Length: 147
Image (tube, rainbow, N blue to C red):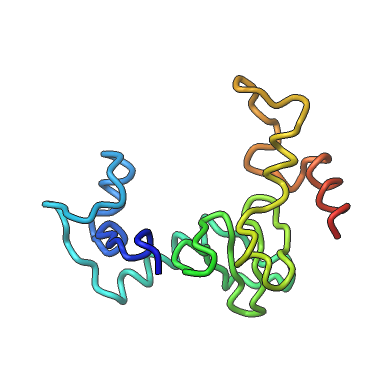
């Protein structure tokens, strides 16, 4: 296990997480004077609510029982999600379904390279498909070639 996974993130277990993150910009602290431990049941309810807002339904089976892989030690990526119903790993931005084993080894979706190579992409460019990458014709075409 790497040092990255050994670090303790108090914020994830704290009742004040939303206040610190959204109002103060504080995140991932190992020590904090505002730490107020959140009981496991409340944390599970909070995480389920956040997943319902941030993680889409499974593109393979349609289940809403999905969560991001931030805490998955094999993947450890908030942009990758896993479906609890069918076990599918997929990209939360473009809904690409990772082939078995690829999410754990590759850890990046092909659409990121497609977006970086976009002829319209520069530092000042705001993509019209931001927030709905799966609708971009270049992304759809590039991912279709991967299949």
